[in-house]
Image (cartoon, each protein chain N blue to C red):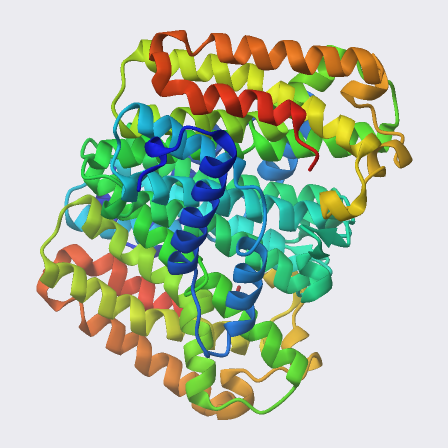
Length: 302
Length: 302
């Protein structure tokens, strides 16, 4: 049963999560060699948790262009590998110093710092290996395009650059403008979400118009997602979140919520979600799951 | 003037180093954005130092198959980006805890730990972005093949796995067999050197026979290189090396030298270097630089 046979978002997300979990399980290394500790840390941080929203976006965008299941699942898995590596490294004591992730001890608490650094490094390499492998697409030009876009989204001008900005802003402790926070978040979380939302268009060799529509959707949705995340940091609890809430406030970190206030932030998130969905008009009913996803992102409790 | 116009190894190595330095300079991000600290750390760790042996191997193997300069230089640069990221992460306090690298403060001493972790992460992403870009080869299947091989060489079954084994062996402090050390070093340093030596064959779409010959060369040369490194850790000084010598002995680490003794290790390195060169017979005079490189690797003082 493909993702496209689902009509409702929540079962579709659960289906996507289970499918990508199986794919990740088959892609991650395992064994009894001396370096098994590394494999264990990689599997610990990639399997058995997470909403898999990024994977969902990749799979849902792929269904718009009738991409076969295996290429879509491998691409979704590569994105989850990068996401997992970034969480491992962000949780390190030298970075956000977080002991809890997805309701479990973070990787460096469960193993140790060196193992966590190495597990993150190996997961990044694996993500690119997965995309470059011929099982991901018969046309190597498509594989190369996916790799260029994932590298840009996750590198110095994307996710990693955004994390750098975040750490620097926290160290300075100064007021950030809404523009500066928006740029930071577009890099830190938005870039990878955008890649997930447009990956299906790359896999399906979609028209520039279709790809631009999905990029517009991702652009607004990514910000809505981040504002919702900031709201959850204020309103969430540790059991639902599986990570420590209140950390941003405690750190005196400028967030959308600290600048806009709770009510305006919530209004803004809702507005962005509707704006995101509006980009999908040309896809008709086929994009219903992505429309529902936009609502989910701002209404979620975890 | 291409590398192939050089007849002597040392000027050829200097030429390769200068060429790849210029290419890296053009590939690395720079600017005055908020995240410039990240760019600075990436440039600090990639530019202005290192023997560039891996780059040389990539360029020298590319000349065997008349690969154009730009593809060869971009591939060599991608390998140096991965090498640089691995040195940044290996030097971190949680790993080898080294304050000195290439005669300068290591990245986390010059900047800070968080910046060093992020710089390494962004360099890895950049390496794959460079390889995937169409400037690296007109045939995307070649780019995809380079990416698969670099990811394997640097990931959990290669460089990162080898570093894990090394840390675990040090923590246990037990005696390692020569077989176990050989496996560790083939992963930790040998795999990336092997990729460098065979990258030219991938770029040049060389025959399986040619690629296997280069793989054989790399296999023996990589071990010779590591034994020479272990000898330098005993016999080198901090000014020549630009890093702290004696660290392995101090850490009670099992190395080729601690097991074989200085004399047998030196003999073994020489034997492996000659054995490496013997793989190159079918290339005739065209492989003279690679033959000289094998001698250099065991005779070097830094």
